[in-house]
Image (tube, rainbow, N blue to C red; front, side, top):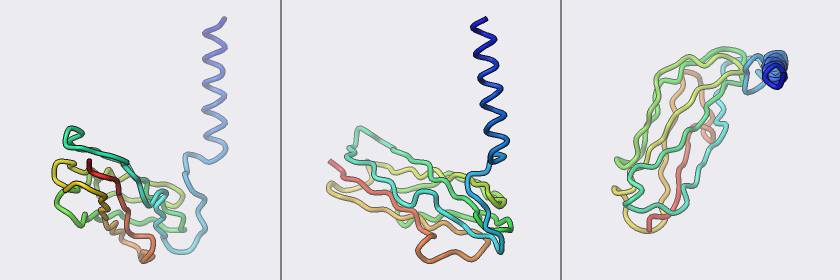
Amino acid sequence: MKNVIILMSGVLLMLLVSCTNNGRIVEPKGGNAHMVLMEQEYDFGQVSDKDGIVEHEFVIANDGGKAFVLLSAKPHCDCTTVDFKPETVNPGYGTTVKVKLDAKGISKGEFIREVDIIPSCKRDAANGTIIIRGEKV
């Protein structure tokens, strides 16, 4: 009986999610494609050489009315790399870009690193760069 209740709860939850937004993460506003960074900045806090490579996943969404392609993600520093694949982002949906920082490759003290996100659509100047920050100890 307990298993049946758990199963029914799971099915109800899946139906509720699929009926409310069909998996969308933003509400499309119509018009042209429009890239939205769901999170523009991430703070790693304190990192040290023993942490090695630290990473964070950023979500890039499309709240416009047409699809765009995420073409590239370009870090400003050799200590920062990105994992992503060029991908079509349909209205209301998103994709991820994983930013990795090699803690061994940076000097002690506070750091700020930027990664430019390049979509096939026009991007807002204030909405095209993701930032990672922290302090190397």
